[in-house]
Structure formats: C-alpha cells, structure tokens
Image (tube, rainbow, N blue to C red):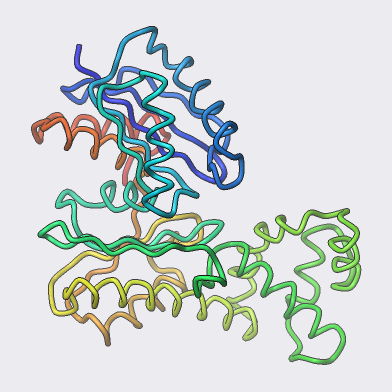
Length: 324
C-alpha cells in the first residue's frame, strides 16, 4: 500500500497523519509541541518518533513524508531537519517546510496565494501561480516583526501598567489583565513576572482578553487594530514582491488569533488590503494545517483530485474539524 506521512509540528501541538495514496486516512496521532526552536533537534525528533510509533508505521516506509514545522524559518533549518528525518528511514522522500506552507495548501485547492499565520507569533508565505515564493524569517523584533499572541499580550500588560500609574490613558485592561492571573493590580503582575512566579511566556494567554476588551475599550481596540495593520503589511509585501497586487488572489488567514470571519481584526485586515490589493479575497481558514501537509505530500506523489478530496475530508475529521 502506498503511504504518505504528513506532519504539522506547532508551538502547542503536533498532528501526524498516515494517508494512503488513494487519500484514505490510515492513522492519526496528536502529541505535544515539536518546534525545534523551543525543543532543540533532539526534543523535536523525540516527539516525532513517538507519534510515528503511535500510528504504527511498523517498519513500513512511506513513499513521501512532508513535515511542516513551526520554528523552521530558514532553508538551512529545513534541510537540517529533513536530514534528521531521512536518517530515521520513515519515507523514501522527505521534505521539511515552515508551517505557513501547510496553512496555505490547506486553505486552497489552487496551491498558490498568500497565507498569514498568527498564533504565538506571526508569519507569512506567498506563492505565485508560476511557483515563485516569498517568505519571511519571522524571528520577532530582530526581523521587524510584531504580532502574535505574545506581542499582543505584552502590549496589554504594558498598557495596563501605564493606565494604573498614570503614564497612559485609562483602560479596562488595567483590571482585566492582572485579573486573568488572579491578581489585583498590574504592578502585582509585573512583580510576579519579574520574580518568575508567573512565566513571562504566559502573556500569550492575554490575547483573548484583549479581543474581548476591544469591544468596549479604545486602548484594547488599538492593540487589535495594530495587529490587523501588521497582517496587512505582511500580505501586501508578499503580493507586491510576487507582482500579484492586481490579481484575483486568495489571502488566507490562519492561527488562533485570526478566527471569526466578522471579527474586528479580520474586518480590519479586509479594509486595509482593499486599498492595496483590491482584487484580493481575504478568508479565514479553519482547516487544520495537517491537512495542508497531507495535500502537499499527495501533490508530490502525483495523486489525483479524488484522492486529495478524500484526504482533506478524512484528515479534517480526524483532527476534529467538520467544515474548513
């Protein structure tokens, strides 16, 4: 039986699907995060090996393995991880890509367009109809990035503190932000983070708080609007570099912060892109990225459209999504 191995390795979880050449889902497993940026190469490979054991490859060799991984931001990092995976003998042919490629492929049947992912961080990829690619390092401030749950949460902590001590405008974040952690004031939260009683990474948890407060608070709304503007900047740059500003092209939005087709952030993205790429269509994709990894693997296999449609349906169901 012809098999493909598909992985979406994220900052919070990892999905692995074993799919037949006809699109049938053979096995599915979900594990913890596997980003080599956070776990290192050994930690990443340990998570992947556990999932491969769980799906029961059992000595069989997949024809194609496609792994779309968070924290793999440069071609040399993709090549290095691919080398490590090849050494395991899981597949005859192995490709490792940044996870943004999975979001783009999951959201479109055409295989080209622009995808912006906004989860813990923010990233973007663009592919032209002729196969040309645009990508971004997405390493945070050192590569000019702002966005994602960490940046949104940290902005909320800062605005809450400035509201509390009078350096900034009053905002409901002053109470909502420390309240999320069971504390009374922003300074209590600052001290808890400073003393490592609360991990700074947990400011990620504050993004939903900001979105909720933005419905009634101007300061919180400005943080959301800034996020929308950053997404517009990424997508616009990708479209311009590919020469697609005047083309009818899909801009796909993925990740935990870009949910809700009528949310303030998504509407802000639509409005911002309307003036830069008027023919572009903006769409939130709820399709799990592991679907994109599976479709990329089937693309490499030359699988027919019927097989790809079956894989899309069955992998989506296994990942707990009924409609992407």
